[in-house]
Image (tube, rainbow, N blue to C red; front, side):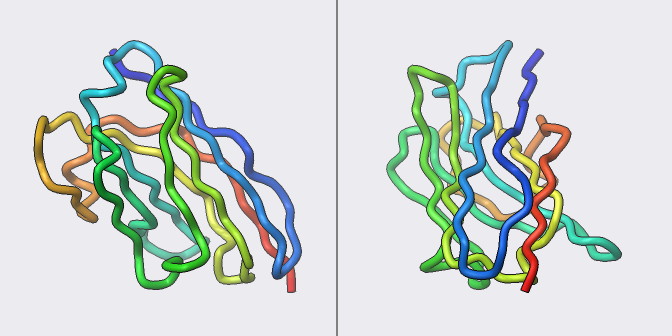
Length: 126
């Protein structure tokens, strides 16, 4: 059974950077498209970024394009989210997710991601 564990969240000030990581166990990492989602207090969970299993393509939400970078390290079964120029509106719990549909295009639809981590809190103060 696939398990995902996020780390790297914390407190930051506007303009700072943080790097989130997500480690997979119990699955073949290279078979999965991977994604990051976030949920702010009182809001629905939303898509942040995704990366294909072959690292051939990435996809970003408009709100983070140019500031966040998603990457993966397949030998370490780890995905990262480099977050730069953080804004208070980036405050949320960040979740990593895995989409096991082989050879499929990246999707922002959370319902296609069938494994989820427990999340890591990111808080950005102004």
